[in-house]
Image (cartoon, rainbow, N blue to C red; front, side):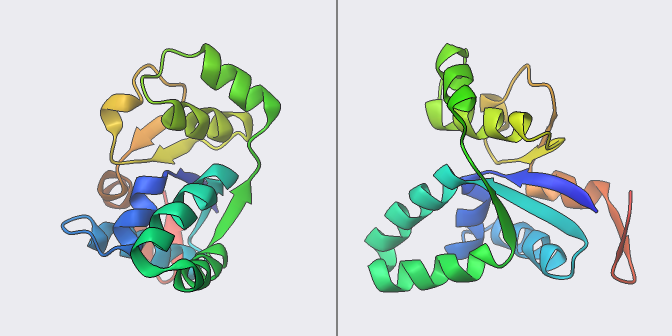
Length: 145
């Protein structure tokens, strides 16, 4: 099963039903639910999402939403080396740097984001959810690369 790292913006597309990106995020997480792809996020992603969702939904509903999300993703730790690499990087957005180096440190070959321009000169495939889904062929609950 293919391993993919998902940036916070893709998850927000799903949880906040942000059009026109919601349908691609929903399909991605549906495929994860059917065990066709293994989605990974960083611990930082959960902290960011809790902060954003708590402001929008309140802390109780935010936590329940994240509990449902946790069933579909594997959470990867942000290591000390990850922070060092992010601090030394040329990324304009520090949070993006942490996400990228977290994926890289855990040997995840694909990172999905909507901020493609923030991930230039990277050593992995950087795609939108739409690009990723369109580049894969899915059949009878199984993945065909």
